[in-house]
Image 1 (cartoon, helix red, strand yellow):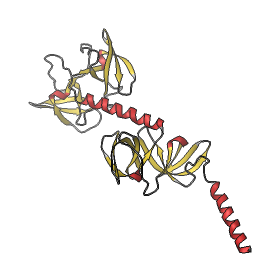
Image 2 (image 1 turned 90 degrees about the vertical axis):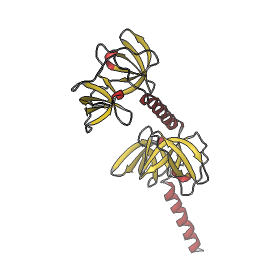
Image 3 (image 1 turned 45 degrees about the horizontal axis):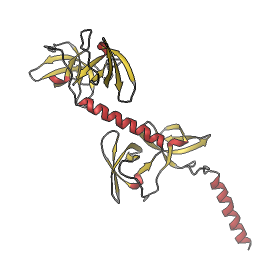
Image 4 (image 1 turned 180 degrees about the vertical axis):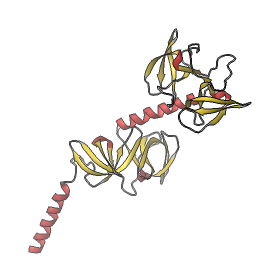
Length: 274
């Protein structure tokens, strides 16, 4: 009888000890490996070191990250089956300790196909995917819409001044192979392409003539409402941003970016696309 009583006491004490590490709402506890939000569309794995006042302290590699409990998710147990549907927004394992936000495209008994905001599809087991909060879903959807907006802009060509011909030494805007626009200096004009000195530190390269436009100046033509444009960055090493024109007044245009924000700009700040 004494042995039974002792065992019962030990079980009780162990249970109490474990309970002190559990969160009241069933969220991850100290020592658990979790997946936490590191940006609007990216998540990382880490180990919970502290939980206090609705905030987690999580060790990820050599870093300690503080984040809200709402942005922390338990690592799914091996073999977990999901109940997601095509069109749902989730996060999925991509590589090492990194997870990406994206849209569910297809589901089989073993694999879930997900298209991340990056656009490169992932095929993951059900236990390498996590359903997330409405706020996190909204962040990912906004970034997916921006990607679609920018992708449309990348297919368009610059509206060039009549009879413009690039010259050696001229500063221009040029479209890189990934579709983004950057400042460059013309090194040489060839029969079919133009040699460029990229001002963001990239190695020199060549692009087709229809992917190069003169740097905007006072004589730059104003685009029309609904036109796509590229907007000059704050410094010459940065990427130009895609936008659409929502209003024009004289030499000033109001443009809207892929994230929904608007800005009023002069004709010297943008280049029209068509």
